[in-house]
Image (cartoon, rainbow, N blue to C red; front, top):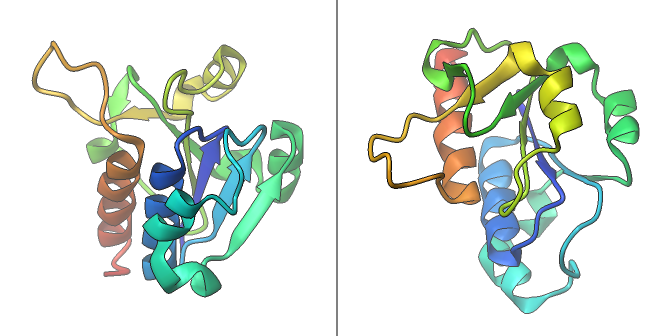
Length: 151
């Protein structure tokens, strides 16, 4: 099993789509810090469809609270740019894939703290800065689960 964490998500449909991915893969979803929307927003509910009962949702008011729940050794950050891609990383059971907010990514303090576990998704067109958050979670989560033999 892998965990997915979103740092201060801002766009309800992205979080709803990630929640749906987490329900489909039995991956707990951790929401950290200030959430940029109300969780009862229609767009969030619509994106997650009727799968919310199967989402293992955990809220963490601060990053420190998050690290108390999941050991820092288990946290892997997905960020643009990063020194290595997710394709070469040796994923392990119980790890948590941490993604930053849509507009800012992860804070510099987290990037520095986890500098040796920062992964990126290759982008072939240099004019494109980043991918959609929900798409990024899907790409890395399914790749990691396949490498672990879970799918």
